[in-house]
Length: 399
Ligand code: SAH
Image 1 (cartoon, rainbow, N blue to C red):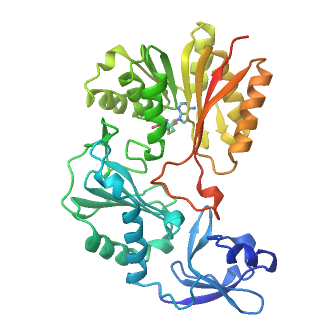
Image 2 (image 1 turned 90 degrees about the vertical axis):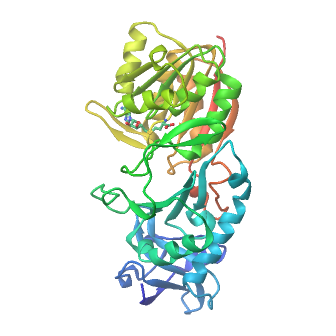
Image 3 (image 1 turned 60 degrees about the horizontal axis):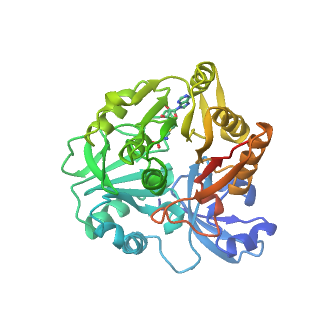
């Protein structure tokens, strides 16, 4: 923080920035080599040195920083952060009032005006994610703002910029009174065990809230459900509570077994009546094929990129084949829930993968409904990539 630099936008992208595109990306600017110190302020200018916007330098896989304002006179100080965070809190008023859901996002990066920063709420606890060293240099402003604006049990943080994968120091605790983990939060009346003191993931992905509720309320009753890439089994819990005949959760990570048992248990469900399998999903598909196992519902929620001992999976390259595996073991009139958080392609392309997978499997389908990010994950129209979540409920038709 402190120093300032002028960065020239390439002529053909000046309008894009004027219209509010927030990401400062290497391909769109001229003198990237002037960016020396993360956190430094950037004045974006055109060829004639006319001011376009002000932002900060912070290296993320996505780019070199984010535009914060188009007002030349607006200072990036404590009050700036207060204005942005206060506005974000105001937009979540209905979430704060809802007794049935006590976990949601209160600040969604560029969607709320500050790229590289997210803040989630978990029943009185706040979790800050810093996505670059640059944004982390503003930590005192963000912390002071939270202290001014909200009551909290504690604040935790993750430094998502640490490439060695160490996102937390000790337990990530910042302020307040340390929690006893897991804390139990509620989502549409269902309990979820959450750990703010572990590495990257806390036990639940808040952006799938509407999908989980839809599975519980409209699709699960009486069905056999296969939940692949299941992590802590959140989709399985909602399916079981929605009356599924049985759920089968499959994840490669050893931790998924105790974590899924825990999520069932905090909801009073007998986990022994469910299947929880620690295995490579691609191996499981082969096994299911051999044993002629079929399911009424198959949930696919792979990471954008994953490497296991035998397989590498890239959503962009391999989603179609993943769908074909699922189609093969889904009952007629069964439903596939295809989900991806891959920002490299949009809904249109995702639907093209779905179409190709069914065509190549000689099967007909019908799209029942689709989801993108929920309301608390605020996005802006100038940054379509920010709305990364794509979920499609697909019915496999007879014949
Ligand atoms: N569907 C989950 C989130 C999935 S996160 C939810 O709603 O909470 C991605 C998960 O995929 C991780 O838990 C990871 O362990 C798992 N994974 C990655 N590659 C895998 C593979 N080849 N087979 C099974 N699981 C895999």
